[in-house]
Length: 520
Ligand SMILES: NC(=O)C1=CN([C@@H]2O[C@H](COP(=O)(O)OP(=O)(O)OC[C@H]3O[C@@H](n4cnc5c(N)ncnc54)[C@H](O)[C@@H]3O)[C@@H](O)[C@H]2O)C=CC1
Ligand SMILES: O=C(O)CCC(=O)C(=O)O
Image 1 (cartoon, rainbow, N blue to C red):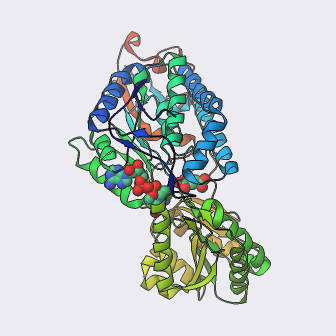
Image 2 (cartoon, rainbow, N blue to C red; image 1 turned 120 degrees about the vertical axis):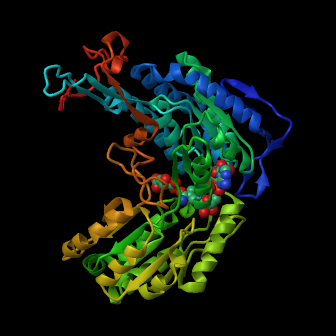
Image 3 (cartoon, helix red, strand yellow; image 1 turned 135 degrees about the vertical axis):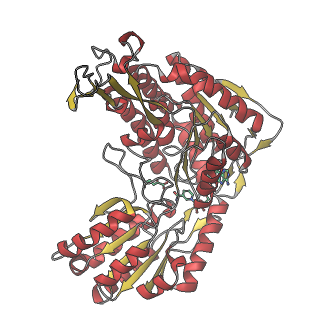
């Protein structure tokens, strides 16, 4: 395959090369990828900056057509995309086909969002020339794109959170050019998708500089990208260390910029007494399904479970342990991620009792699922027990009573999700826990499992630090576009000078809040 990276429509070759690795076999995959350098970051960012003004003023319809074209070009790659992603990530076909559908569905959702027009945030306050003691000006607000966005592809979702994933889709929808730093764990997948985006740009007649991709091992490239003065915002999904490093770089710039980093979360699940009494065994089995999905490599993985100690919680643990004993070892994304998982399991082993293990690994980089239990006092004394272990490992916390669960929940860091399992008589305790969960998490679920985020208008895939670096936003769902827009107010500008979004007569047909009333 063509291993050259892409800057503003041009394929670039360099002397340094790297290879993808098949984690299932621990061997390099045929084909070489050209390593980008700081000069390429500079070229990509300059091209993005040059394309920005033209791109951000394209009509919402033109950008919607473009996003749909990207989706179609990704689909047109067909089997080679799935095959390459399988080789590079060890993820199974069904998962990758589902992820491709989620990726193209996400692009098409943003096309709808653009056509619906609420994203433009048009607000108009009519002038009040006769107002006493002072007249009021004509005030018109709309939202514009923030500027070129740096997107870091995530290792664990090689399609839906990578080159044409949620961050890229939202930035392009907002009118921001994108420079992607490809994740080195799936370089071929990244370039196939980058090619599809570039073809869609050409087909739609848009400036080629609105998309570039740089690649290579190591962190220098990503750091140079975040430092570049043309970049105005960053989207990231990955490790806590990586996210925090990028936040620090962005804050140290002469012009600090926002970093929307989605980092670590243990996603507490609370099994309330009524639910445990009614269905402890079924809960235990379903929990293991969520825990082991994708070898547990989800930031929404249920890594922490609470219940009041007693026979019902014992039944839950026994059912979960039995289900876990049948869990096949699954390939993890990279050797480094597998090593980090094993280290995390060791840390849990040192502070909690092992009560369940998946089947023994039958090849390299296979994650062996693990379940631990401990009591609530131990968790309060040793907060390391509730740090994310990326992979299929989870800790069941036995509490004396519901008050103790509440006490431990209050000590937790910010989370992407929190889940309540409810049965007869659980409404009152759930109501008491809700204010705590609202302070901790971006999404609160009842009677479900946190893995598998719906791409929808009401979704929040975010949460307080360290789940994300900015709890005011979401990285999944249509509200994600707000991260890459900023409001501008136009005071007393003549109609002929105003952008179409806020001109008299509403030429774009956008929904508007005029003097406090919603109109179109
Ligand atoms: N919570 C989550 O959603 C996820 C967590 N992880 C965690 O991250 C660990 C490593 O996995 P990766 O996916 O490789 O994540 P990572 O955070 O190490 O790398 C992600 C991307 O950020 C870049 N990067 C990382 N640190 C950087 C720095 N200091 N400066 C500039 N660029 C930097 C990398 O080059 C890569 O392109 C896993 O073992 C797991 O613990 C990984 C994926 C998702
Ligand atoms: O659970 C999901 O569908 C998304 C999870 C996610 O965002 C992640 O693992 O990075």
